[in-house]
Length: 502
Length: 128
Image 1 (tube, rainbow over the protein chains, first blue to last red):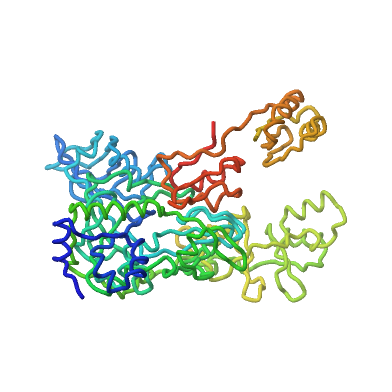
Image 2: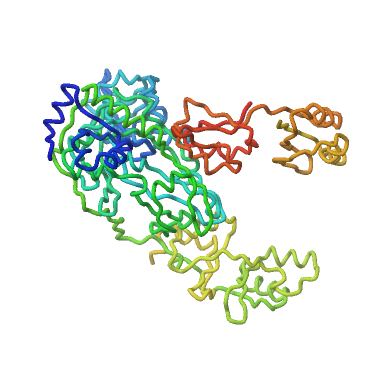
């Protein structure tokens, strides 16, 4: 059996269409069988509501008198893009306010407009013969714009890896607050309700397909940026009229210590054409797997601790290294349901008809990492190879002499096998001299918890270590934990003027 | 019932909580305390019927006592029921009901405030 899109649209028009949500579909398929479900169900609605940083809106202001060609543009002190002709701009969701920083950003400007609040435009220009005006200030409501078109380069991730943190420090990330020692697992995504997870082969979702976008009827433009369906991480570029959107499905947010983002409600209706659609839309939380990534590793290649399903994540408890760790979501499943339900009502009422893609989206490609023609500075470019170290069984007095002679404030401490076992600073030695207790040897006063770096580590990572631990030097060690150099705050001066390149 | 007790430690730093336990015989559960050289603040839990007794005893020893009737508050118009707070809270105050709506067990809250910065929608606040 096969149904055509025209047959389904005809049922929408005559009010006999049978619409279910993607959450209801697995049970229907289990009860009626695949053939039965194909006969019974015409449309499956999907929905998701979560943080989608790659979002924003094109705005057209109309011309002022005298006219201005706006070059630098701010809306409520949030800078918007000024490289689009005279009176167009793009306001990006994650752009932060010049004054309120992460407390207010582009996402808040968009939400304020949708909520009917007035937003202050401030713009400047160098002035031209045709656009003589140099500055403008005006308060604007959403209705004052000729166009306000949401256009989001990357939305509706098919799934998203969960996050945890193995370090001893609390991390503030775009995956929310991650407690130390893998104290929690944070995840995002609607699982069984996710649009792309219900059409992983991208047979139904493509350019021109009508969607629910923040309460408005929008559409899919095409593949989203970083679209990577090969591994199950497809994305979509979408658009919709901001003037028709609702605050119920569009919310600004701040990930503490990370920045501003926009919560977007997005749903796609899927026409049940054949058995392949039935099978794809029968997907359950149990069938969708993601990795739990360790965000304690500040690298693109974060280690995956294990695989989990959305069912396990949503249960609230994930087992990690033999322990039960609490998991919680950043996206709202309740809101995702509301999106799918609202979309269902639209179709039942006949206010939205379905369409097949005018152009398909690639279903097998993978996103590439950034091509880096120039490597950033590494520790080996600026480290001090003339490192002075001391044996753990040396006397404190010897350490004092070495510090004076070596013109340094840090002495890595090594054992008989030349392996790093500690560090002493001028402060530790001075303290031992002022308060002579039982300490005689370096090992009595050394700090044994040494923060180290390696020669090929990026300087930015080493700098983060210095800042986080409030220290001013890092011993550089090789794979056998032997000290080969030292990196001090002084060495960072070599970065200025590109001297590290030589 | 939860009481927020503030006391000065300037005059010799009397062991106020221990004194009150001895005088009243009420076993006080200290849920959270910040004490430094000059002052202290403790959140204590006492049985409802002995709240007055403990409170009066604390006040007579020079402490300020405030009865806390509420735990953390949720601004319903900002909350989107994501549940980001759930895994952050050390006392399991938050949960999602079968309709995936956020629920609070206010009586478990010790007002530590850890959830406040974890909320992406700034929907959580300490009670006034």
